[in-house]
Length: 134
Image 1 (tube, one colour):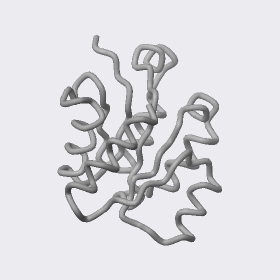
Image 2 (tube, helix red, strand yellow):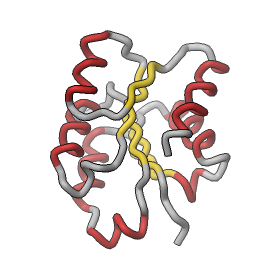
Image 3 (cartoon, rainbow, N blue to C red):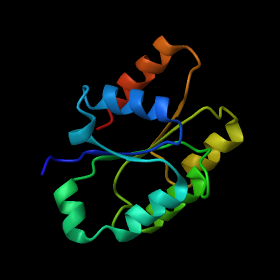
Image 4 (tube, rainbow, N blue to C red):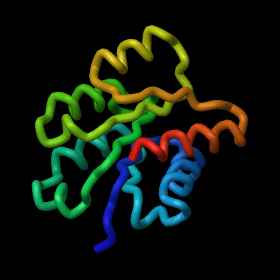
């Protein structure tokens, strides 16, 4: 089985594809696990056995904040309170630029926070910076 490196929790399929391709150098299958809403993310992490974690070697978790069913901050809290995932770096990549929200993300254990730019070229540049995190 191919090694997985990044869990991407993103509900916008276009953003998810851009992020996964940029981080994985175009090989989304071997470098990303894509989850499209908050409940799917919680189910994924609750269902992961120790063997799955070792096999998948998760190096980075990227979360959008505005997700269906369970929001990104709640996923962040879940991950950072869970000893199986608390040491994995979590980056928030969201359109939300509100300073209060950014502060809340860091208070709850985010290792980084990137605001999604509207411009496509800037979006790709941010992803290249994000890629250096893993």
